[in-house]
Length: 137
Image 1 (cartoon, helix red, strand yellow):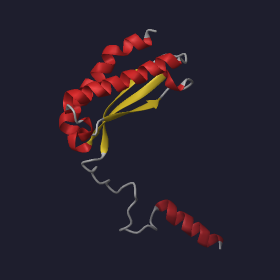
Image 2 (cartoon, rainbow, N blue to C red; image 1 turned 180 degrees about the vertical axis):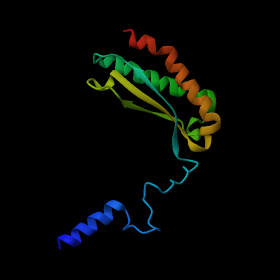
Image 3 (cartoon, one colour; image 1 turned 90 degrees about the horizontal axis):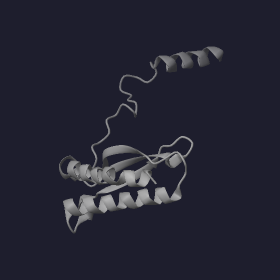
Image 4 (cartoon, rainbow, N blue to C red; image 1 turned 135 degrees about the vertical axis):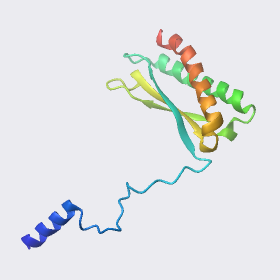
């Protein structure tokens, strides 16, 4: 019995048991995103401050919402939902989660290469131009 267990372990470690046609799920290429799927076009990290401040966090959220609305209006007019533009916010701080945040510009895959680059650039340009007012408080 010990010999059988040993043989199985050696076979598993050397990967000879899998056979030539077996493929690892990680090795399989992922299918391209559908044209309507949201993809991350660009990501930036913003430092909000080392001390928790609910007013600053709310001001930053309002800034993100405003930047999204302005960039969408510029690039999609009255139909911003057609381009599938949004953003995500991920806390990155070690001790205080919102001391640093990652903001990702999300755009529908169909528009990502063309309008998406310009739209996300405008979105982040608006944030960059106003972030000092929030972090200086």
